[in-house]
Image 1 (cartoon, rainbow, N blue to C red):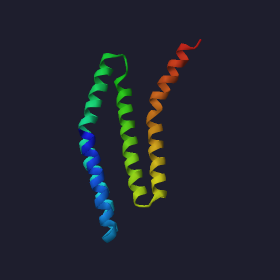
Image 2 (tube, rainbow, N blue to C red):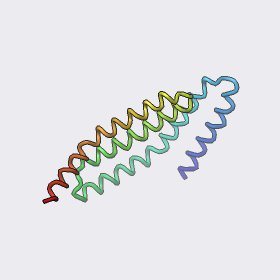
Image 3 (tube, rainbow, N blue to C red):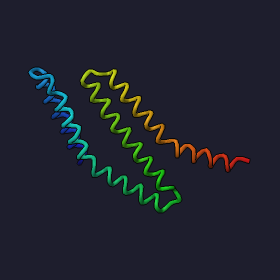
Length: 128
């Protein structure tokens, strides 16, 4: 099971961080980043399966493929932003974490504009 691997990496990283923090606190960030990268590698296979499934479903329906690509990009930005925010908070930099979070939200909203405008156009066409 993949979740067991992910939990294992997380717990091992946590134990290493607790031990390393006593002697070299500056190295805890590196352990956290390494654990995050390893977990991301474990998840990549599942992400590609999900993307392939969404593309197959999109091809079978009348959904615009460009919207699907935008939604996948937006989801990726949300995941990466959350990862960066967590790293910032782990290092005690909550002010930077808040700025990264706000930046991610602004990017997501700006990327959502084509979908929102298409939805509004569809609503306008339906209304008399």
